[in-house]
Every structure is written in structure tokens, then in C-alpha cells.
Image (cartoon, rainbow, N blue to C red; front, side, top):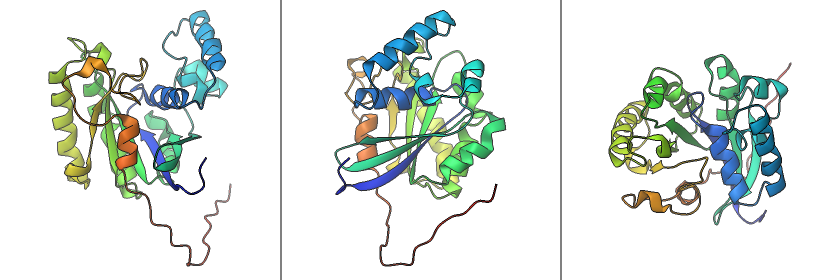
Length: 240
């Protein structure tokens, strides 16, 4: 990583099964942070256990309990580089009983990536009464007051890649985020398919109606944290 670049910490948050780990891992894979043979090996495991959509998520979900539950339990940290930043990305769990681990990850972050399940079968609506907004509120109050919203699983809307579904979700989420305290003109809403890789790095032809940034481009739009080097050293200590 280029030591001359500023560092930014990003926490990936959202309701359970919204695609947080898949979004994070597929982005890392596209940036060269994960070897192809690792994905191919996990793809075979997916077939063996009849969980065909978990090959990217399992790169980050390393615990046996993660695999047994098909869900992230603890945070995981990874690194990647953009044109502007050296990034530390924190993949946070989405289940309510893991909220303590989520807040640990959010407390380290400068900005959030909120992953939203956009499926027409009620994924977004389930998140509305679940962890979607609680995560956004907690992250904001812990100091990560910049947010990128990813409307995920757009390949599973009806019709596929539905602009109407994207607009409906964006409007409802934006209304809530404004109440939390986020600045509305600084919030990009990006339609993505994390499993297929649409709009993670390269602009997808499936969204010809979308003119905004990709996820990677949106990260570079975020403001880096101020780190005064002339102040005394401070360390956080936790007694277990």
C-alpha cells in the first residue's frame, strides 16, 4: 500500500443477510486482494453444503460457527487501496444478538457502507424493522458520520434491476438518515449486485438509468479523517 496516501476506516453495516460480507469480499477480489483459487475452492464447498451464494462471504467468515449459521458473528478487517486512500474495511455482523460486535467495528470507522436488501420479496421491509436503521444510528453516534448506501440484490427485484424499486428504497432510507443527522447531499445511493459484482468497481450496463458513482468511486468521495500528529499519543485499552 502507498504510505503517502491517507488512511480511511470503513465499516460495512446493515440488516442480517443483506449481503455485507459478499459485497466486501467481492470488492476485495476485484481489487486483487483475494486469489482466484480461494474463490474456486469455496465455490466447491458451496455446492457440497448446498449454499451456492456464499463463496465470497466465506472468505471473511472464517469461524466454524459462521459457516454453520450462514451468518457473520464477529467483525473482520481487510485492507485495500483506492486512487485516494489506503482503506481498512470492517465487515460487521447484522444479527441483533451480535450488536456488541457491530458497535466495536463501528467505533473504529470514519465512514459507513450501509448495505440494503432490495429484493422485491420483502428484504428491504424486513430490514426496516430490523437492524438497517439501528446500525446507521449507532454508527453515526460513534463518529462515522459519512455514509454510502448500497441498494444490493438488484438482480432479484421484479423486474430485474428495477429503477422504481431503487427510487422507493432510496427515498425511504434518505428520510430516516436525515433524521439521524447525516447530510442528505453527501449520501450516494448505489444500485449494486454484490454477488455478480455490478457497480462495485466498474459501471454496470444493467443500470443504464443510473449516472452516479460506483462503490469504489464513492469511497474516494468521502472525506478523510483529521489526524493531528502534534498531539500526545492516546491509546484505548480494554480489560477482558
